[in-house]
Image 1: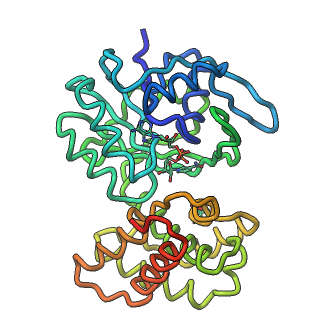
Image 2: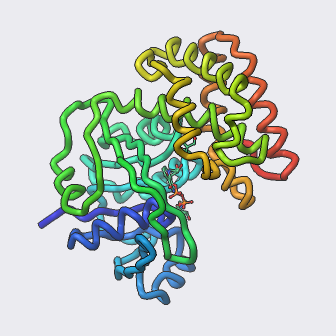
Length: 305
Ligand code: NAD
Ligand code: KPL
């Protein structure tokens, strides 16, 4: 009998994972915020995943954090700023050798969750898949990509990677997951805040090449100072490649701001600036970018943490 996949957070990525695991016949249970969300979900036919314009609905079982069933495997699919509290609500249900898969972007939330659960195995993930909600309990699979998974403490891959294979979730076990997370953080710091400040698509940053290059130089210095030299290799070229390859897209931070949603600033640019301060590194352009972004969020009456 396969171990149940408990999925915390039925947003874009949580639904994308739940639908594919359920489609493969694997046991899945969604953990929703409260009774009101559960009632809303139970009035719907299930989770709907739209792929290439075709919608399929999967009647995944859902529960609230109060449900009594113990949890052996937990996919944490909340935003970085919600992860710690959301996991704390489930702490009493976690088996002593529970495994958590942390899908959060940026850095900081993973260590906070791991510190909260010293007995559990926390696997960090970095994903280039893209999905967005276009209705309640309905998600569009917008961008095919890859999910890298790794454990900073134990290099051995878990056996349940077979479940991901069966579910058609493209993935790779990574022995340098921190390098991947730092590299993605640096990319996000070089691109996302500028798209908010200039109110533009990624491609329009080609008109701000000097500013992007200066930020990449400071981010590379930071990565090297933080013991992540591999994440710094050719950063500027990679950033320019991503700007070109995603020219027509709006960055995730742009979309959060445009939809008046809280951003993950503290786990991206905020985390980078804090790391620089810890290392007494002076990175004036990165720090100035942080100030400008915080001011912009304040002006829009959005949270700046
Ligand atoms: P989302 O906002 O669509 O989903 C998060 C869900 O978690 C929401 O449904 C929210 O209600 C739920 N949640 C929050 N607190 C909860 C709690 N205490 N109990 C139960 N549910 C709770 O977010 P998302 O886009 O799926 O992103 C999740 C993470 O994955 C983020 O860190 C994001 O940066 C990262 N990511 C997202 C994408 C994407 O395409 N959406 C791609 C790569 C990485
Ligand atoms: O990951 C991204 C995002 O929008 O969050 C890209 C496309 C790489 C831009 O930083």
